[in-house]
Image 1 (cartoon, rainbow over the protein chains, first blue to last red):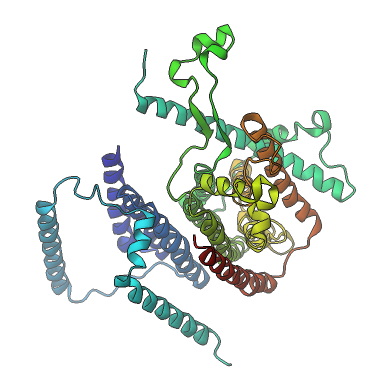
Image 2: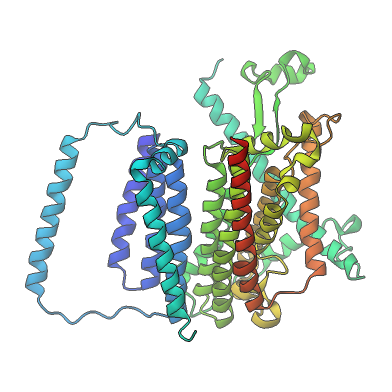
Length: 163
Length: 365
């Protein structure tokens, strides 16, 4: 049952991620990204971390993507025009290289993994909090919050041009 | 014949899903009638009173009418998005329902205690089994609900955008901005409740309230956590876009807001999603702040049927308050709405978290 759910959501994640980059209409891309994020959340949940799964949906799918869509709809972005074709051969070479890289990496990962390797790892909310607030990560965690605060102040300063 | 435990669980889950969804649909259709009647009385009118006694068959009449209406779709609408929007709205509304407890846990009757004809069909594995109307008990129940309500906004946004209508689009934009703003206050209001209970599970939160103040109702979170309760109620009202926060469908400015172009059963689906969300919010408030199914008076029992009565009365009271608010308060202006959300609710919730956290730390828990 878990395996079935994993393969279904993994396939959904990959397909919707392809839609995100393959779509001409930016609004469709945004919705496809929401689907990707939600299927990633299902995978997190299957890995035994419902907390991360919920955060994934709340923060990314629920908050950030709503803002993306908000901007897309407000600006009424139309279909993306085809970029004028230039450097077709160079692009093809890059694409082949990237695909080769991806296949190589996927092969390396798959050959090393044993099935069921992720099970038995404690990723519960309590354990997460213990690790996150342990001395090892505490400073990084606090530094991140200061970074976010700085971004917030910056956003307000940009939005409010005259003080 | 003995069934394997997995199959037993599956059967019980299916029964729970069927009963809870059926009950919710029943309450939804009843609510449409109650809302119109109560609102009418508040405005010195009568409301729908023609179909059946007191007009109680009105929801059925409405359903039949909507069913036979023509389904219209604007020619310039985005077809798939237009069709998907009500499905997303109803889907997310019903997903949030899955982790909520409906009434207290109880023991199913023993086979011996049942009358003859029932006992014959009552399988042994059901006899005396612990049972609660809650479809899924997950580790992070509260966060799950929060995540699903965060997704609920997509139904509205999709509906507003797909119709290719200016009123719809503005309604959708208003809705996304509003839900996004009030989600933060809603999330912050949960935090103190979780801190006091030490758990994300709704069942644990209910139990923690009953254990306080010797079982008296003064120990409920609504009293102990009054600021959090008020913030929750205001933010939740905004989340489900009820008056005075119903700007996404403000009919004096936007016709009907994001669902202007919807008709027939698609309109009914959107309405259903809104009512289900409202019921979800009321059930959640009952569990988090009003002591769930506990009576709140030490002498009064809250097990079994009593629990259901107390629980149902609290939910009904909250639903009535929603209607009452609609009959009482005018709609916010948009800048007032944003001001209230960002400059009143969020700071109050944040300061209250600080106070509660200090208290919890001093109490050494």
